[in-house]
Image 1 (tube, rainbow, N blue to C red):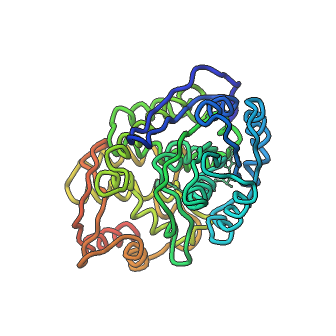
Image 2 (image 1 turned 45 degrees about the vertical axis):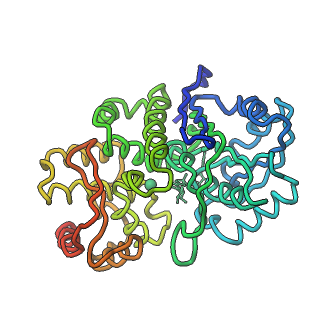
Length: 375
Ligand SMILES: NC(=O)c1ccc[n+]([C@@H]2O[C@H](COP(=O)([O-])OP(=O)(O)OC[C@H]3O[C@@H](n4cnc5c(N)ncnc54)[C@H](O)[C@@H]3O)[C@@H](O)[C@H]2O)c1
Ligand SMILES: [Zn+2]
């Protein structure tokens, strides 16, 4: 998972949202430029870095050094790693720490970590002093291609994930692809499911490119930056047109209705990572689309083949632990998504790169499909 450090010119992707537009800076070694970028964006601003203990062990010193080199005063706060930190208790700690560090309007919060830290620190930034600006420095593949872009921030409620939060866009995203060299392979793979998702949603050419180049992406070659840039470009374009998910942004949920139900059935434990659940969910979305006569079976098999090649689970039976039955999965989907008069909204496909929103899928049809799949 390691590759020599190259510091070339970064790839910059703009998220165009009028006054709230911002850049995503993608490249190996870009963390070193964080201080200079922040100094240019907010001259004289103080910074508070929020991270988790694991990420801090690997990368906090480098982040602090980058800020120090630009003469920026920074304080740091770390929370335990893992989804459990997206809680009211940890949010309170982060908010109090930001206030104690005298981070005020005009100053900046830096979220240094994966999706957990981005969601938690982003939400704290959204509410402390009625809104502080923040910078995302994503350190997982999932965060670099998905959670750091688009401004969704949240913590979890006892009723479910991401139920308390806000739309709050960052002012800058710095995705240093070298930070992924320390990410465990299993987490890298899980994030890759979201990369492949972009191809499946709307870019068949990108999917074909991934089939040919995924090994270089994992190994840390230039393919990694390219894949992250393509992913961010697609997410940025969709968010630019539909920031608050009233329409098209829902396409990003391909595989997520099935996937979330499987994740919930596994209790959001380490047994099944989000990306692993999404891999299964995308296979199910393709299979379900085949069942509806939307595309040839061979197209769905191609998706399954690629996800399996990178080592992601593609069959529910690949997952260890108790397999939920169709009724349980239906129950979990009903909790997760609005089921209106026995109808579910799904993201379906007419092929790789051709997804669409199907707002009125019959729950009975989904149940029959899941029963077949689990048999
Ligand atoms: N806001 C959004 O739009 C959005 C989108 C997708 C997912 N999410 C959220 O993102 C979260 C999942 O994010 P994640 O998969 O990044 O998980 P995560 O933040 O928990 O990171 C996964 C693990 O990797 C460790 N880690 C992170 N970076 C590392 C590095 N560079 N080297 C070594 N270890 C590292 C972390 O400590 C953690 O143990 C979920 O809470 C999900 O709800 C949000
Ligand atoms: Zn996802």
